[in-house]
Image (cartoon, rainbow, N blue to C red; front, side, top):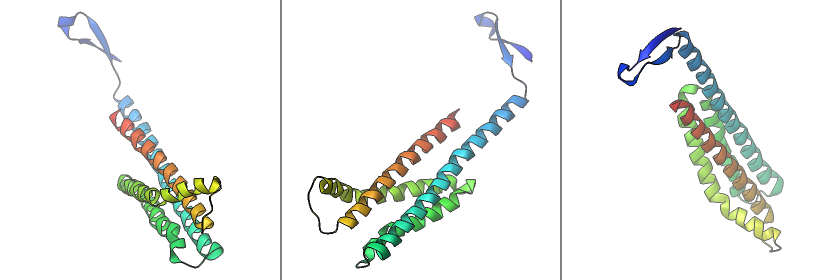
Amino acid sequence: MKLKKNNPGFGNQIQFIRPHIFPAVLLTSQRKQKTFLGETMAKLSIVYGVIFILMGLISYFGISSESVTALIPAFLGVPILLLGWVALNEKYLKHSMHASAVLMLLGFAGTVGGLIKFFRMLGGEEFERSSAITVQAIMAILCLVFLILAVKSFVDARRKKIE
């Protein structure tokens, strides 16, 4: 290591200069960590997409095939699955994860009413289509959890970028 005198007007402060290899090692470890966080959210997006698709198919074919609205979770799951798959390429990670977060926000906004009805239903109130309300409540909770994890990963990625 080399020694360098720092600002002669402020006394004899000595600062160590790191070898040129150290920043490369630091950048490599930061890239791996950033990729790890991104890959985790991309894979989580794929898992959520599959869960929503299955939930939509089960609610349509298993519970009630009266209305196409039972397939709404599947309609949300397909783009989430595709965005997660696209996010596996680090070049498109940021945009596809933000798009996934926006879709989940829309999904939560559309199903939060079902979550409120679900808690009222647990309190003893009776509703006409309790299975639809239950599916909406599950979807609202899943969307909210994904949003929380997405925001946390965005904040972590920003902090890593600043460091």
